[in-house]
Image (cartoon, rainbow, N blue to C red; front, side, top):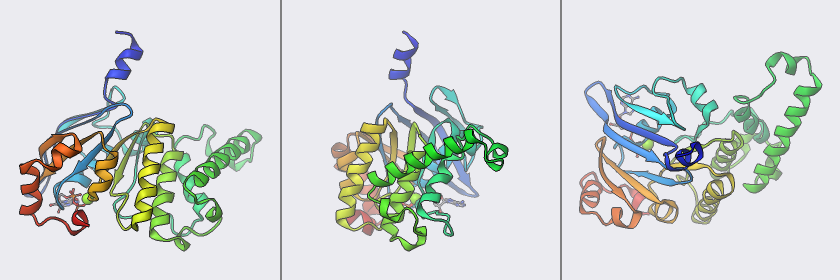
Length: 269
Ligand SMILES: Nc1ncnc2c1ncn2[C@@H]1O[C@H](COP(=O)(O)OP(=O)(O)OP(=O)(O)O)[C@@H](O)[C@H]1O
Ligand SMILES: [Mg+2]
């Protein structure tokens, strides 16, 4: 096989046998998750089943007790979060994390500092090379804000926007960082139904136009059904089902897991 063929067939993300305990709780218990190139994989399960913990393990914010994580062909199990970001892993948060004192545009630009070729010194000295790079990044930020229908808010404080709009800024910021893999932790949470439709369309564009592979945690089953090529289901930290969204949501073990835990109100909505 040539190198290109290998890259096409090899998943962008391969997490194997991941275990993470918190005191007496095993939040993630021997889970395998793979995401293929250009794939949108759903990570679902009742509240407290280990979904966000899994994302934190993939970004490096948490270290696993057991297991290995390979990304773009490299073992990244012990690699620091900022280096994983540089390698091309972006994420969004279940609870929004914005730089609340900054404008929408400046929040966007925080994503690109991980990649800036010119160091802080050349920026401080205001060298032409640093200015040219910054101008280019600002132009790309404006283009993405337009794609997310946020361009009129570029100069506004990010806190002046609704939660739904701030979620869109978070997604645009992630795309601006140029990731290979985007980990989305409940992007539809708190969005009104018309905005959920927009979100679905935007996530499709992230994959189709930007080639970003996606791992999507979501309680809104409409989002899962419309977007995901494949779904992985966790229950009490264990992987209990995997497959096509329609098959998985009709799997008795999955229904039992949700009913046993009290089907989340958000999942019913
Ligand atoms: N930092 C932590 N310290 C201790 N326990 C934690 C920590 N993070 C998560 N847990 C526990 O691990 C389990 C899994 O939590 P996690 O947040 O991963 O679930 P989740 O599937 O994302 O749930 P939700 O759908 O409610 O967001 C829960 O029992 C939770 O209380
Ligand atoms: Mg969570």
